[in-house]
Length: 249
Image 1 (cartoon, rainbow, N blue to C red):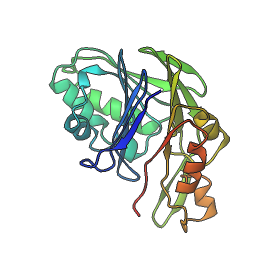
Image 2 (cartoon, one colour):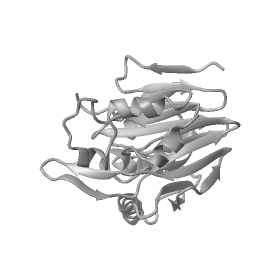
Image 3 (cartoon, rainbow, N blue to C red):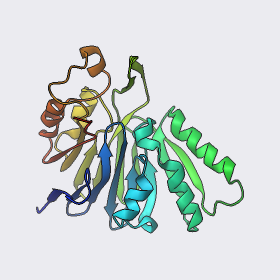
Image 4 (tube, one colour):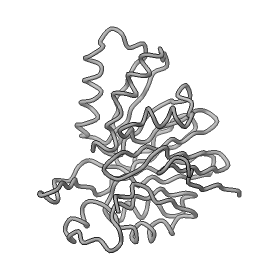
């Protein structure tokens, strides 16, 4: 098997992995700013998360939006869904006709609100159907030759001066195609589901928000994100791994 795993030096925070049947491109990933992952097969492409600037990043890296068949969201925090309105607006402008299914975790208020808001802005002039759907835990979705299985992970928000917030609906995804597997952690603290998700995947994209020597409290760490050390430990259970969603050093 010949895999390519690299970081484009001309585009910071951009990564590409090439397998036999799946190609994974990370146009941009940085904790608290934006995160989006493009996975492409012979039958088309799927976008996992649509962070701020996703449209810009997709176009600047010449990813073919006419290949986009659907979108999956790991959760509703702004750095993972903040670019949805712009992306939908662009697809409306260029006259997309193919339907666009959008999956998000059950109870993901932010994504649902963004879809409803976009449709309410342009009730009569969207040339394609937007289908909002829910991802249920451990329910496999067969889509354009990929089997996408959602793993419920542990993730809470955290903000300055307030610390840990309530847990949000959050999923990691395991994508399989012709015996090849990609794991996407989403944002998650260390938990059994995350470790199961990554194990033996051909490539695991694991969030590593905090530096290993973080001074974040144990309470916050156990419910929000991984340290780089934790991410490496989990990533090594896969055949190959890539650290994403790295925070500001």
